[in-house]
Image (tube, rainbow over all chains, first blue to last red):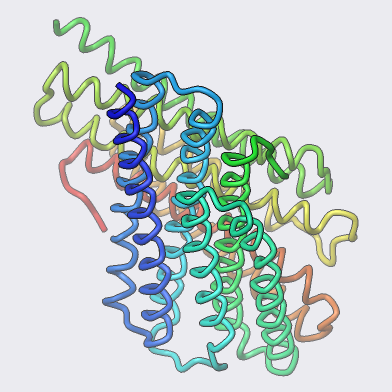
Length: 214
Length: 214
């Protein structure tokens, strides 16, 4: 009985890693399509969101099965509950990657009014946060989960940088306004991805310590 | 057998209407909290999103039960498939209502730089679209579904109006930039809600005619 349970828990962790990888790839693909103004790739990124939704369902079913057949207690109970909460945030990260690609489709064909380096940097930082939070979950690494939460400031600072830059551009030339708004939205979605990665790490901490930070 | 089936289909429709109502209320509450800068109400609006997610799961289970136990064919098959697709868009509308409330929390305490009338109008129009698409689904009303899809132009025009107004404001005074960005995002979320209502009606048309417009 215990063996089967351990096996199912390991399967849960493997599926969580898989969903994490899917989301990292979704962010990467969305940013690649954005930078290259590649509409075909953007469409692929939008379609890929279905697979992420599907993976969320798979994990949900696995968690419910664990609850029903194994009646876990204390630590294990929290570990499974945390997974159920984490996948909601993970699914929304997938949504935002898809949202970014929708904006890519809108902007395609018009040269960018600014370099996208900070936006690319935001994407990189959120991926680091995401990878770390999944690792923190699987290895019950409290320190790593806390570092993710602290790291969100880096993403927020980058967002402020992009926002102020775009505000200045619109202030100086309102002709840039249309695209500036779209780029602002891209940055906002990345900032939200950072928020969701933070939420994920808060659930990881809950799964380890039993306390939920808000 | 057929009686039980009819009963389950009616239950599905009732649950769809229920989820529709939940989402309409979510939009209404989010906009009310925004306009009044009511942070308590905004927090309630964010929490209410969990109930919407739960309702999505309920409907999903009901659809799967219908598939498995009744093995529906042709029209009924499409009707249930459409419901499964519609709830994904409905869930995202709930997310956006919650996103708007997050922005309300950011902006609270600072007087608005502009009247919110167009934003309120956008909310009203999206609610009309939403109510009509659910009615079109339940009554298999092709004409109504088509009218929703056409109505999305009204929301898009309002979004352009808000966007251009905000661009002009930032252009004239970059001090307004911070809040202008937040308001822009609110309008963007409403515009996305309109897109999702359009998707819902496209699925309604599919459920009636068997053809999917993209």
